[in-house]
Image (tube, rainbow, N blue to C red):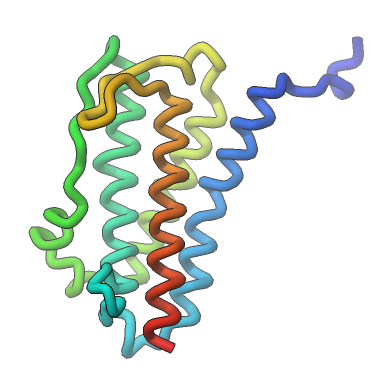
Length: 167
């Protein structure tokens, strides 16, 4: 059988599509950021949601301290207990409004690229490893990817609203 004619299993194809979507998030964020005037990058949405700068810092920190940390623990420990991360508390404690947007974006993009590469190298068996996520219960690595996509989608909705509010 010729290896070049092999079609990946359906679950691998679906997982690859999810990874493509994860990989696209930094560029989508950058596109939105470019559409917001520098003078408005610390302005919050009318509903009080994060400013553009706060979104960037939050995405960076959650990628590192939640998703990457959870993935590493799920790969190295047996059914670890995974703490929830309070994004609003991080924003307050780290004074996101005084941080550098370009640096936050660059770190988020680099960590996300690393995460996608790491996830792409996992076997189906590894993707089924589990952890106990606080407030959720048992979750597989594939479920963690789904949570990442949900989180990205929530931020894209909020960012789109922010862009409309600032227009």
